Length: 279
Length: 248
Image (cartoon, rainbow over all chains, first blue to last red; front, side, top):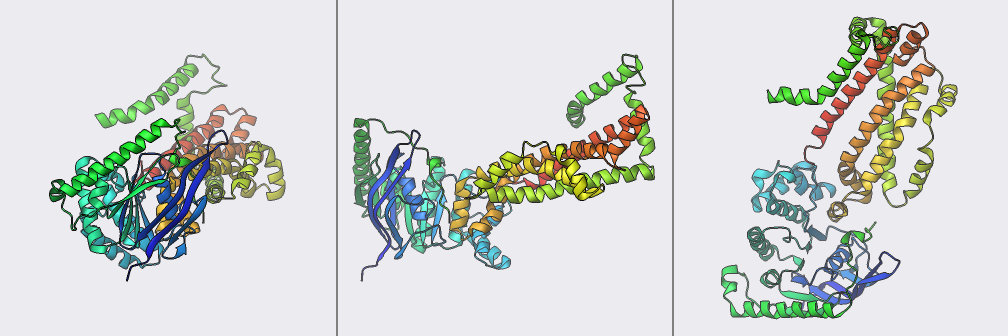
């Protein structure tokens, strides 16, 4: 029996007012179904609305049109079934590493002792147990992102919403964290929506890659990545099919860039102008 | 050596001010019966400090200053946080109208309502310090990174709970800056109120001394309130360092 879609996105659109009173269409006519346990990457140039799509899935930003259903229920706001991981980590700077990871559990009414034990177990898994009492500012970027991932995994969301999570890291750290994420995913098989502009990252991690166009953001095409798992980077790099996927996606992205250049340049839209969702 | 230098450098302008003032008095640039030498004022202050009655006046002033500040802190932070959330804009309109009113003009009314004792002076300190704290909290809370709140909401924190678990700690740096301004205003306000109508407190001591032309005694409360302001600022810096150990 086929699993029902974890996430169903229908005719989804987002537009907002920009300076001068005009409306900018960020996203238009997005149709996408994501199966339970599937790893889907959203690939596109900056400004194509891929982060906005993720924010709407998280319930942080309300859609202008269309609908999103998660496990058959329409999204009306944020919820612990969808855990975000942001490029900027968004850790609570006033809390220690342990305090950050305990946060979700405490908010959901888990007792202090149990929350501490579960958070410590998770920190052991991401090799940060000895940094439990550190503040985020005392950690490197890679460690901070590991803490952010642990903070989200702590409340065990069915879906992970990752917004260019490794975009702010150096190449080596990025590779390490990609491997760690794959290990976690291969163990837990959570549904993952992974926003990125890195082609090889998308191919390495995903079951499917959604390629977006810009202005307005639409789905250009969806590419199935039929590579065996567990994936090992060193093996993939010499794998013919892996290379073909990378080349195919690079070409698609190149096309998107050319199409964009043919049109008059659209006004850049700052991410921070988005209206924050309220509950 | 380096530590000594680090403490001396910020103190240098103070020492210079002291030297200029002292020489102005000693060399007769200013009439000594109008401007007493700071060394004389300091000496008088040290004489008075063990005195029970003087300490009573000092205590009264501190109660009013700190009491008023504490009330303004609790009310200002609460209102500022609430105003920062959706629908809070109306509150800020009210604040914008009330904030420019010179609060000292309300003092006669406060005396009529609350009487001559602590309450009227505390009320004036609250009225004067509330707005800097409220506005600092409001603007600080508005500037909180939305992704911090998103992370909290996704983790299962309610809208009201996140006000305390995220917005408040994230706003703390701004609140403490507001407190710094408010504490200075509180020193000025409590002193003024005591000068206008009071039977005790440092401001009252200054009025008494001025009326009988005791110039050294007149400068003692002034010196003391400036020292209090300095000490409160040091205490606040200490609190800031502790409270913001994870931030900045």
